[in-house]
Length: 114
Length: 110
Image 1 (cartoon, chains in turn cyan, blue):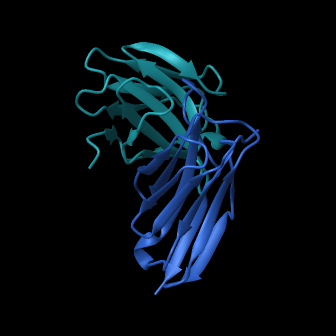
Image 2: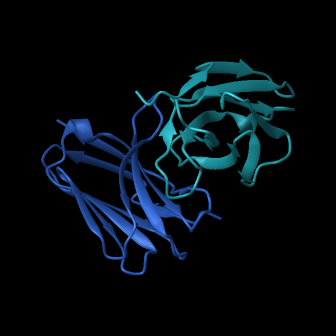
Image 3: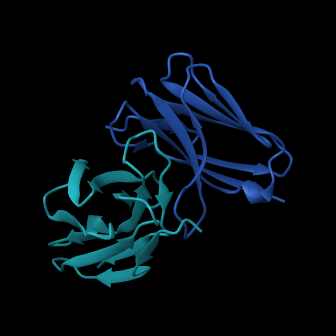
């Protein structure tokens, strides 16, 4: 148990729809990072939020957006869904967001786009 | 472009065998982490190495960081079915965000 919870666990959407994924970080952590993981591959960094501000972004288009709330929970929003967006979306919390920190991952949200 | 390449991509072995997983890059990393991920779960940190040439042991698992801090290896001695999972290396360059490798899927049969 990492203390990081994600919802929903599974989601099925159709192409063109919008989706919101949620993450509650571990108590005491003010940084949340989002990753996209295709089947059998390593996670790809989407973006990170530190104290409610975006603090780094990977190579993802603007239709991937996020938000962090005062309690440090976070949302990942994806607009105009495409088939290739089907993946496991992982949220990880940490203390400061520095690259050499331990990340505490949730169990992920499995998104299927039909 | 994948900065961290892992090999092999898949590994299927019998219980009791030894194995090594490699993580290679052309970039220098200030630290490197190894995670294990089981189906339906997020990755869980196994170890962090920060010094070139560093070797860390975790029971039957031995982790090594290359002298030039561009590569790492994970060696498992006498593998057991409980070792089955996706092994991921992840590197950090200074304060940059953590970058994950391509992953190695290990299956250990009884």
